Image 1 (tube, rainbow, N blue to C red):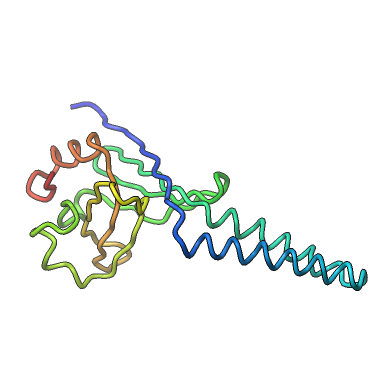
Image 2 (image 1 turned 90 degrees about the horizontal axis):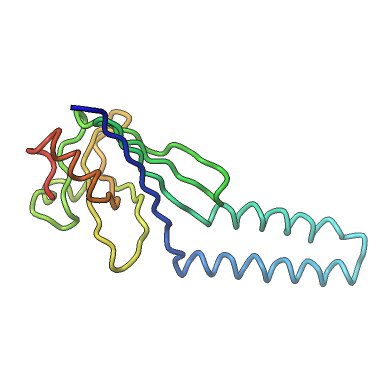
Amino acid sequence: MGDFYTEQLVKQKSTGVTVLKKAGLIVAIIIGVFIMLMNPVLVIIPALLIWLAIFLFKRMDLEFEYLYFNGDLDIDKIMGMQARKRVFSTSIKDIEVVAPSGSVELQQYRNLKAMDFSSKEENAKFYEMVATHKGQKVRVIFEPNEKILKEMHLLAPRKVFI
């Protein structure tokens, strides 16, 4: 059997809270500009607000990249299409179960801490994985494609329910 490698990019949908945060930042910048116009000495206020807005806007634009290579799954968070950070990594040996969200196989794990690396789209097909991460059992919500699911199922047919 040869090596299996695949990657998948999932863009997270902007939620209502994210849109409100962005609107709040824009309003704060406008207020800062008006303060600067009234008193030019306070030019630092809008400059700091603009810098903060640019920094936070990038952090609110999220994508998740799933990298699957021969039984190892890595999930990276990409912020603003620039900064990348590894947020989750596991091996098929550390996985207890992978199943569609809401399935019977996941009932006993519903009280575990959940890590959500999905798009949050309404029509998406979410899967949950229970795995050991940093010494704790966690539930991971994600959206693997068919290739990743099939390969995981080949390596661990009793753990992966498609």
